[in-house]
Image (cartoon, rainbow, N blue to C red; front, side, top):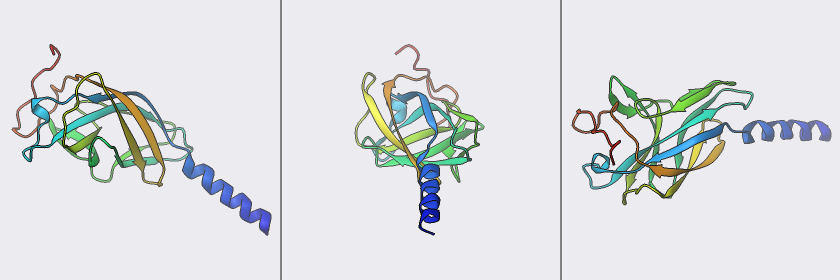
Amino acid sequence: MFAVFLTAACAVVSVTSHVPIATDVVIRATDEMSAAPDGTFMTGVFMTLTNDTGHDVTLVGGKSDAAPMVEIHEVVDGIMRKKEGGLLIKNGESAVLKPGGNHVMLMGMAQELAAGGEVTVTLAFDDGSELEVTGPVKVVNLEQEHYHSGEPSPSMSGM
């Protein structure tokens, strides 16, 4: 009976400790469109997440020293909103988090993020697993998204 207990315990640990793989991580530099009405800043985190865990996972949030709130967002009909229930990534598939689509939002930041730095975000999944990702802060064009005014954000490609 002791050996059976160890085998079961090891199986649980291996399943919950294996997380998706993140590639092409980029954090958007803040600008005038990043300012929230309360004087804080928000920005997007973009990447590709590949799920090779052996089971479906859902990205539900995260944490970062750069921001007190980390949420999963989507853009529907050009309007950004929180993605209720998180982002399901089926086993063996990849999810591309990009401007104009699903992405991670850093919110409530006291300071702006300038291009050239790096930010670390710990992604949280529904099974309790976490994945730490670090990416460069870059200028990103957000023409596909609408923010506070309902108007498209200006192109930042010339910055």
